[in-house]
Length: 158
Ligand SMILES: [Fe+2]
Ligand SMILES: [Fe+2]
Picture 1 (cartoon, rainbow, N blue to C red):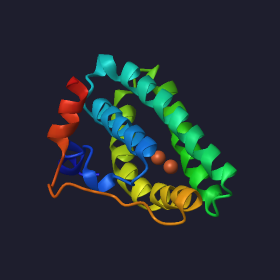
Picture 2: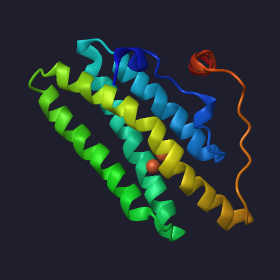
Picture 3: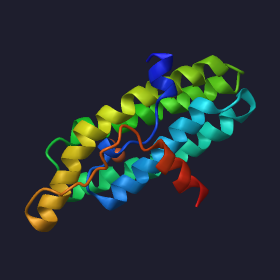
């Protein structure tokens, strides 16, 4: 991922899926990725650990929805979740040896992985959940702005 794209990584309304629970968790996920991208060397371990705690809980929740609602594409979706956590565990081990560069590379790869995962896999799951509950697709209202970074920052300060 280019440093320009990495520097521009933030939560955007285009990532909203219309499932309040998922959207809130994804906002937090994006903030934690941003935090890992920006962390100085001595804060990388804390930033990585916070991200892994959130990702583990979020992935477990999505995996549970997929199993409960017999989501058709659950195998590949769950495999992606597991692959992220496995990579994070490996990166955490290497960080103990002082390999900061590996964490920065992981953060950049995570920032590149996050939007397409939401827009393809999580989006399909959000539709499936909504269809089971209401028999249709969720309505999503997005602001017509290129970025909502200011909103995210304001959200953090609340
Ligand atoms: Fe997700
Ligand atoms: Fe997911």
